[in-house]
Image (cartoon, rainbow, N blue to C red; front, top):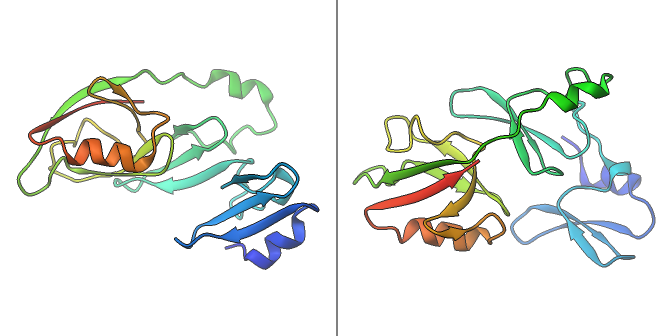
Length: 173
């Protein structure tokens, strides 16, 4: 794991690495007065040799998947495969929205955990729960009922799900 001190050494003048109250690292540019969760490209140091902006995660079935924070996409395709072949990027499939009405279970609720920001992403799906075989870790929640939530704050999306009493109407990518 990369330390904050080692990241600071790689930052160009005007950039700062900071730690939020929640313990999450973020980057501040004094020149543009912007905050971002990704380090600037020159400070990118990924121990798994992933391209800039990518994160590797493991789903509930122990399958590795990749989050591209730049393009806001999730894929099971390893971006490191064929990095030298630029044409390989052109073969990436465009995901189609999927729509589900999920009924609340008395013990398991809707059977999934969501997190992240804009868009909110399904983090895990409970085995045997009402979301099994519907939602997948990495799915982006883009619509709840008739409300488009791709650009909504996490708290808003979680509240819409939490206050759905019997069922929730979700569209995901």
